[in-house]
Length: 221
View 1 (spheres, rainbow, N blue to C red):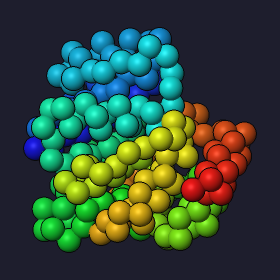
View 2 (cartoon, rainbow, N blue to C red):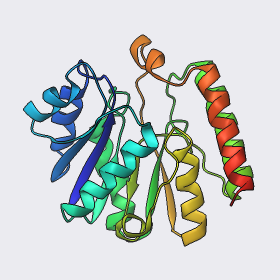
View 3 (tube, rainbow, N blue to C red):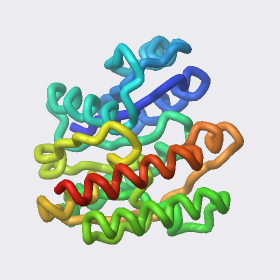
View 4 (cartoon, rainbow, N blue to C red):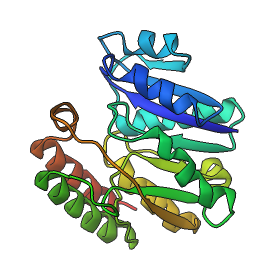
């Protein structure tokens, strides 16, 4: 059973459409309402999602792990994660699922840089820094290590155990790939950036904080 996990924080204006679209390609959608104050969970529930709520904002990594645990309880065999702000196209879920279905990968990463997407310069810089830090911390090169659009196959879903609560969890997933020797696939996908999605992303200060956490964790392995 394929379950979609959507970590969400104050995304009431966007989450409804994302849930509707994701339900077309998965058996179940789990929205992790990460302490929202705008009714995000209520909107998601009305659109047919199962909602798990954090009492307070705990971070993207914590919300993703909560979603994975919920999916396991539901009997999921495969999990798709995607952002709640609409920058990913759920219609591309089948593309990401194919390497899992073909049994050629245990973990699939969407690659926003594999197509001619209109990606703001600052996003390209942040991603490049994230990729280099991820390589330094894990010894593994992923072209779009910081993307929230991923698929965990049966082996990865059974073994993943995320401990990092913030955006640095993306690097932690790559380290899990290396430690568990998961087979990895990278699939070029579309991405839609807008003023809204840009505002919701990491600020420069948050990016520096995330980078420092990645480096610290790499020394504490």
